Amino acid sequence: MTMTEINAKQVKELRDRTGAGMMDAKRALQEADGDIAKAEEILKTKGLASVAKRAERSTGAGRVDAYVHFNYLVGVLIEVDCETDFVANTEEFQQLVKDLALHIATPSAPRYVTREEVPAEELEEQRRIFEGQARELGKPDNVIPKIVEGKLEAFYKDAGGVLLEQPYVRDDSKTIQQLLDELSAKVGERLVVRRFVRYRVGEESE
Image 1 (tube, rainbow, N blue to C red):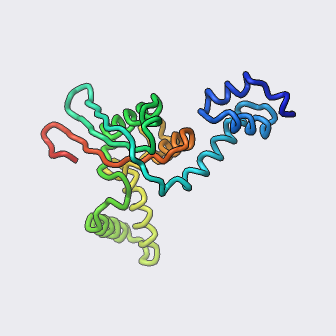
Image 2: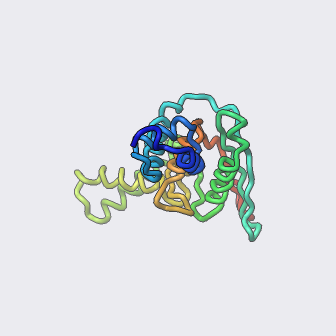
Image 3: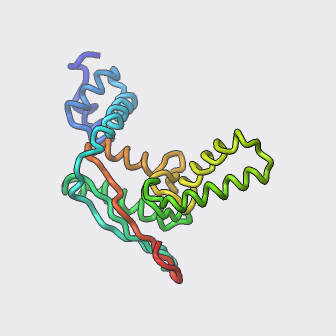
């Protein structure tokens, strides 16, 4: 399909679906021979590939938001940062922040943003627990380290673990990190969960 066969209606539809720039949308449509769904996938793939390149860019804007569960027993405060006020003021970014706060309020109840935040002493304690469990099951010494590492990976994703590695409560086919990456690819900015605190009535803040 030639450039003249890519019409303005197709470009507008693709831009509405992806938030891509006009020329990027047109190029993707040309590459996809006018197939809107294929062009959307092309833009998504290219956008996600560029997320890593934005990893070192500063995030001087963002949003602090709160979520209180309907029974008023659980509440969350969260800060998510981006690069510009323009993105911070978009409906999509604001919805993302709300969705993350809701996720944290659910029984997923993460305690850390990234695995690097998990204290070394807690990891060592978990290693000892997992190793002891493996030995009680009679596992051979040579496979115990692999079992322990596998259980640690699950520990990061499980309830009480690491936010970015948990399956998103509304769509467990993707992790919270993937949710961030998808919007980052769409808006062209680095997005970072800076911090959060989870409150539950009768407990100390988490």
